[in-house]
Length: 453
Image (cartoon, rainbow, N blue to C red; front, side, top):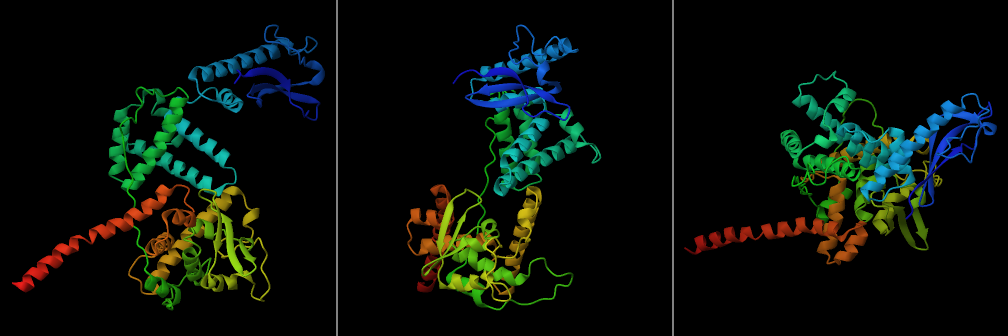
């Protein structure tokens, strides 16, 4: 691929005074990005054939030509320096990366401002993808925890501004392994093992990006050799008789007082059973199923949708129980078909599509929390000893497939896993329990010997 090229150009659209913004066009691999400079001229005052050598982009007839040409020259040099910076790294980069570098005046030399830039970059790339925005939320939680750590270590008051914390502590080039070990020790006294692994994992990712940018040494990478493995939580599974109990036993009704729930608890049972019957669907997907996702093809009833987690296309053939469960949600109170864009289960507002992406994210997060709590409560109300959650319904479906002898590859497709290792991870928990049963043989042996003697 060729080296980037630079050119000074005017923005296409003039303002009401007929002036147009001066921009530096950065082109690489046939892709262009424009760095807008903070001044404007009319088209007749601009020389499109101007060069760096002659510094003649603004014609001599313009009263401030020397000043403007000097400013353009200075910006041109900064763009060249940015290109040189990226070229020295011997890593792939784009014209947009160069523009971002010069607009920021280089990369921040402090960790937290750099971390905040990374979050903003991810947010911009996520657009209206709610799944990616959820990942952005994890990075935002991580930077909050890092600031909390610095407040604790340096005994800073709660009123001490985040901005000053960001600018005062942790220079990227001076961050060392001892700093990370101290952070890890502090995290381990306050958070679960999985949370520690998450926070350190996100920090590691950002530091690798900083190393790619030449701001952190690979040779003295501060997180080299530091591990924090997460632990897969044991997830209960419901057996056939427990699934039947959840599906049919009347839920105990208790007056909780307070105002009416946003979403009636009567929808918890159909939602929970749909998670199980629709091939162990994820709660985040079921919440956003719409009427149009329910498709009837001859005698077949299917749910067709794209998973939010890995963008996998699903086509789930529904059995009679699932069809009967969903049927009431396809029509309104008058028995008329509901709009195709309406949500199947009423956990999100009707004007959801008109909301900003940020408000959609908040509504979706709250809806999932609400549905999860309702399903947990439903499990208790029908008398199940196991704690029922949406993920339990997914694991229960996976366990049913395993017990039925369904091939691993088929189970992977049914669960919508991108990587078969994830499906195997489900199995490891099942297999471990089977192995644990062996220990009971010792007790049986002792009982038998005792009876014989």
